[in-house]
Image (cartoon, rainbow, N blue to C red):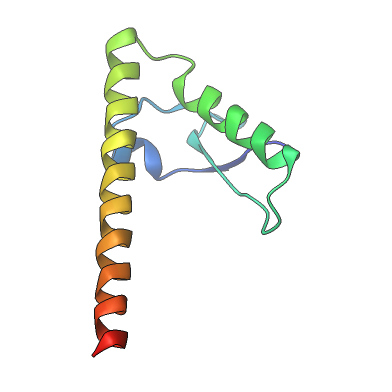
Length: 91
């Protein structure tokens, strides 16, 4: 139970990394089980906390805005993909 750590995403999200157990700069990596459970919700909350705990208000706004933009883009991509599949099956 807990958050698994990796070194990559801090630079991708422009998120300030935090110190790991051995002095390595690390960032939490979220791992969710295939059967989504209450424990997975706790993992998501822990993950979000670890990433955002040392952020300023501006950094928090930027983080959530980037996440929202990525989410909206993903939704639009899925809609376009579904529409394309529907058009292919109708012809």
